[in-house]
Amino acid sequence: MAVEGTSNPSDNIQFDLIVIGAGPGGYVAAIRAAQLGLKTACVESRGTLGGTCLNVGCIPSKALLQSSEAFSEVQNKISEHGIKVSGVSLDLAQMLKRKDDIVKGLTKGVEGLFKKNKVTWLQGHGRFVGKNQVAVDAPDGTSKSYHAKNVIIATGSEPIELKAIAPFDQKFIINSTDALVLDKVPEHLVVIGAGVIGLEMGSVWKRLGSKVTVIEAADKVLPPMDGAVSAAMQKILTKQGFEFLLNAKLTGAKVEGKQVKVIFDHEGQKKDLMADKVLIAVGRRPNTYKLGLEAIGLALQPNGRVPVDSHFRTPIDNVYAIGDVIDGVMLAHKAEDEGMAAAEIIAGKSGHVNYEAIPNVVYTWPEVASVGMTEEQCKSKGLDVRIGQFPFAANGRAKCLGQTDGFVKIIADAKTDRLLGFHIVGPNASELIAEGAIAFEFGGSAEDLARSSHAHPTLAETIKEAALSVDKRAIHI
Ligand code: NAI
Image 1 (cartoon, rainbow, N blue to C red):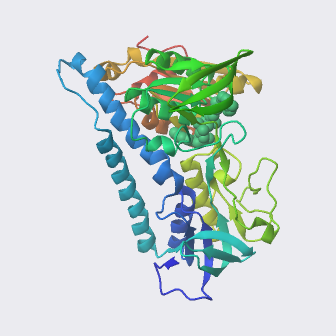
Image 2 (cartoon, rainbow, N blue to C red):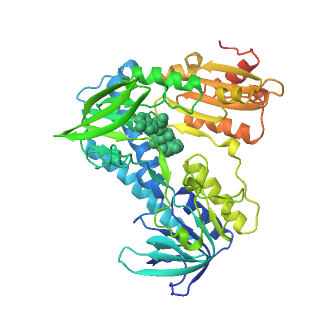
Image 3 (spheres, rainbow, N blue to C red):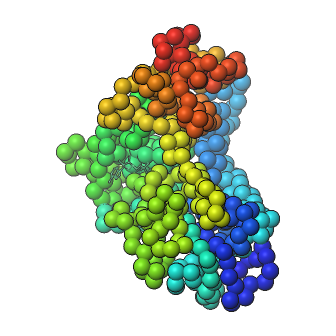
């Protein structure tokens, strides 16, 4: 089924580019290609555009994080401002509806962008039937094949299922998609994995009233993050009421009546606890299901990802891949950047992604954001570094906001002062990290940040102070 941005479809329709998947990587690639004059189609099986991110990922989770934070603020913090409220109660149905409305608006928006840019949406499941031939199996059971000079695989990823020990049942043993639509606040939510999804979705339901226990195999929360960040977040979230069981590995989950028994090994001992829901958030895996890769002889890497070179070219001529299906972090903006670059390369331009300057954000409260290397990574590379750190507790704006948890940590090369790592735990870290990402993109130094004027009073002054502190000359501490 083709929803045309151009003329009526016909069986022998030929495209310069077919993008398979309309997530942030795929739809951005399609729009950029169309901007550059390529006759472009995008295959998407979901009834709406935008992929995991817009439909069941970044956007709905951020909508619920915002709503639950507002609920928590009114209940726990607003009185500090001399504002008295009583009779606060939760209307979960309205909170979920608000989230759904936001998703609807944004996915419709992508549809509008496709129309504006004359990108054809081929509705259905896309699969290769030949190197330049993509079949689209429509929801009504019909199938049609389209010719394309170039194809970009942008099929994203899906939650990892621990099939052997805790298969998803969407009721008691749930994934991140199910965690966005719970119609009742669970009394006890057990989360497997203290990664990004575990902490974000755990935060939502914690703020709405759940007891949240997190079981994490590693010895710290947010394991890949800078050690100081992980330690701070464990402390802050524990203060908020999270219970963390570290060095603990899930070994089974069994539904018993209206609850689920969660079985795990914890520091050498077999343990279990009862929960109303168990959210499995142990990572995502690339989505290459029924893509017909064998039809074109495209073999996956041992890690299940599609192999590409630095120009997103797979070993098969004119077949490209971007986003979560290829190596690298599984982040919407990384996929977008790759989508844009791949479209430009296909159009004969010089697209490029600077992987050193891709920020990473966790939308807990306070938020966590980083770009570049952790202190541990710098050490393991034998780099000689200077480190500056500045707390939000010493920042005037943070005091006025009543959000003083956290810090900015800047790691610079000891000899050249070039920025190597930039880490924030604190209010609006997701926005503040843009300054770090741009500084990295420009190959900046700690001194560049220290010399730049930062408006007063702003949270961003913590960045200037952390940069000054690299040279041991912070003013306000
Ligand atoms: P993750 O990789 O962030 O965390 C998974 C955690 O589960 C790890 O800490 C791991 O040690 C632990 N784990 C694995 N197996 C376990 C077991 N059997 N028992 C106990 N712990 C176990 O994965 P997550 O949170 O599922 O997120 C998936 C992806 O989605 C990430 O790569 C992330 O980049 C992306 N994402 C990004 C967001 C953002 O940018 N804010 C939001 C949500 C997801």
